[in-house]
Image (cartoon, rainbow, N blue to C red; front, side, top):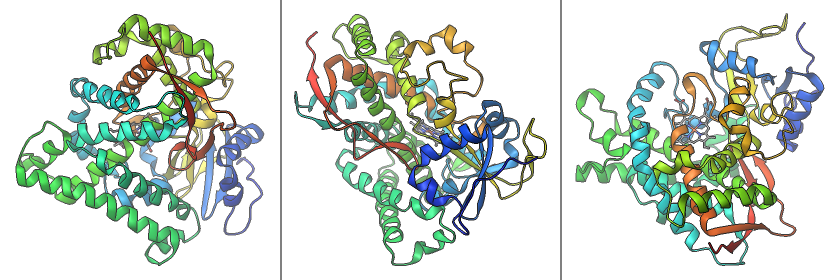
Length: 443
Ligand code: HEM
């Protein structure tokens, strides 16, 4: 028998309840209805799968039965056919082409830039003056992505990119409203902001491509390799723009959110904070970290892993079925073509079946032995299968080294009356920033 659906409103389905509290809605659904539950969002029947094996079936074993879900399909309006949104052969060809920029040797080369940006941003902090650490981590990761992938100093354009991202996120609400996306050409608020954000980002990346074509200079970054490729691999300027923009957007806010939540977790937990400080003091002894330190900082790595578990930047992944998908072990539960499947990291990462005392930040969960005992697919901050995040190695390197750079110099304290509120849009970010008070450490 198919699982019971929720009670929903004609046309909108459960959209209003979902929008009111997206994380609470998914958590409640899993608690009340179990590992397989359906609901309606506008025109879509949605299946939430809250068991790791069922998620693995969708992302890996039967991935060919699905394409990206409605949110990423709509994101094509901005990202075009970049890696995140492309499908089929186009995706496979471009993934092959971009893979070399994410080779471990290349990421090792990027490490110096990552550390420099984290150091130069945090050096400007003022002792005792509360600051929005999310805004700060966004600045660092955007500057790193700009420098390593586009060979461009986007520091001056941070405000432009952030405004454009805000414009695009405010248009996110059009993704699920029945016929909402058809409003994109009308002179209404969200549609106007969508067009404005898209034009600003396209302008930024087009300028970088034109500049590289004119100079012909190979700066060793991804953009150089795409623009100056030999004929066989040559992409059109539009294809290059889609890829560059995708990497710039996918490659900065996700890591920035995780880093900001790392600082939040440390501000909440004096014991873990003391362990992190002891680790950086012993291993780094006052110097800046380098790529070689990635594996010498297990506590920093564990804290970054916990931030990704407790506050997964990708809080739920969507897929739309293109053919029938019978759900393993659930007789009669068959996802139909056009239905949407949701794999919620938010729910599965905090499920006590897979993580003991799941709401606690415990970096030791990620020691080699404990990690080996963790069930397959119960932790998937970077997705899975052929569409797994291409930037995972980049993110781990930046996350661990930037965190070590910051905590070597600073201790972050909670600011009374400003607990973070969560804002799950395309990524899970703190709403209205994440405010902490920096105190300089003396080593
Ligand atoms: C903590 C940081 C990050 C998280 C949590 C994250 C998460 C994810 C997830 C869950 C996916 C799969 C989406 C899906 O299958 O629908 C993905 C894909 C992707 N990510 Fe990341 N990501 C992070 C950092 C990065 C970075 C640093 C880059 C680039 C510099 C990047 C670029 C991409 C791209 C291009 C894809 C599409 C890959 C493909 O379909 O072949 N991400 N990411």
